[in-house]
Image 1 (cartoon, rainbow, N blue to C red):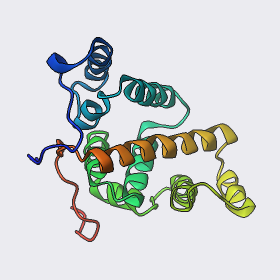
Image 2 (cartoon, helix red, strand yellow):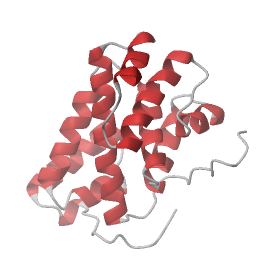
Image 3 (cartoon, rainbow, N blue to C red):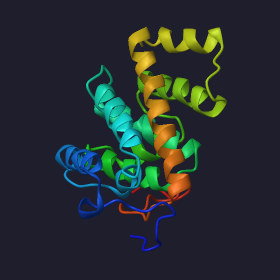
Length: 187
C-alpha cells in the first residue's frame, strides 16, 4: 500500500460537504469502504454523483460481473492505470477469476470465445478511442452479442476511461494490493 500523498486531496467524511458525505456513505454502503479514487472524486460531488450513477446503471445492465471486471481490467491496462489494474485485479480475484483469467483480460483475451470476442471489441474501441469498422462490429455480433450488450460494453469503456483519467490526474495512494506485472507467470 502506497503512502504517497494524492495530488488531489482525498475527502474524508469529517471534511466532506453534506453532498459529498452522502455520496461517500452511498459508496461505503455499495462497496463496504471508500476507495481512494472515490475520496478524490468527492472533491466534486457532481463528478462523484455522475460516476456513481453511471456505474450503478451499468451494474444493473445485461453484462455479467466477471465480464464487467474483465473490461475494466483491459481498459485500465490500455490506459496504463496501475491503480485501476490493481483494483480490478483484486475485485476479479474475489469473483473467482483465476490469475490466468485476469492476465488474459488485460491482454484482450479469454479462454471462452464469446468473452474473447467481447474483449476484442472493447480493445478496439479503447485503443482506437471509439472508431470501429463495419467488419469489427459484425465480428462482435457474429459471436452472439446483442446491440444492447455492445452498447453496455461501450458504456463500461467510458466509465473506466473516466476513472483511469481521474487516477492519472489525482494520483491517489494505492489502497489495493498491487497487480502482478503482465510478464509474471500466472500462479
